Image (cartoon, rainbow, N blue to C red):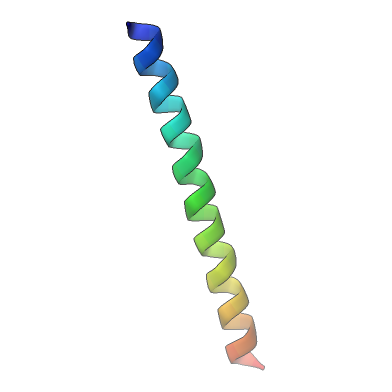
Amino acid sequence: MLKIIVSYITVRARFSEMIIGGVCVELMKYYAHAGE
């Protein structure tokens, strides 16, 4: 049972990192275009 919880948290952490990273990339692209 504990392994399932740990693996679930790990997957969620990686997934949220991907989302946060993707949002940061999109924001940087937006600011780069706005700055031109």
